[in-house]
Image (cartoon, rainbow, N blue to C red; front, side, top):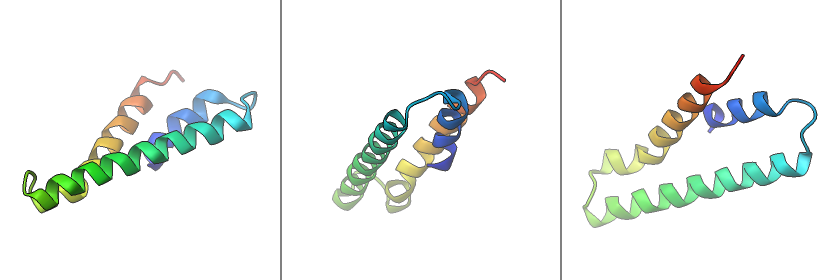
Length: 74
């Protein structure tokens, strides 16, 4: 989650609104919760191995955060 928040905090700067930051943080948190719940449900049903089900959301959000961090302009 931290890797995902870094590009958003650096790209907005000081001129961004607080409400937009809070709304974006809530949307990212809800998206993470939904993805984690979905992966755990697949794990409980046997569609995913337990290790993959437990770490799927973390790995996907890490990859998304690294992608956004690499796309940032200096």
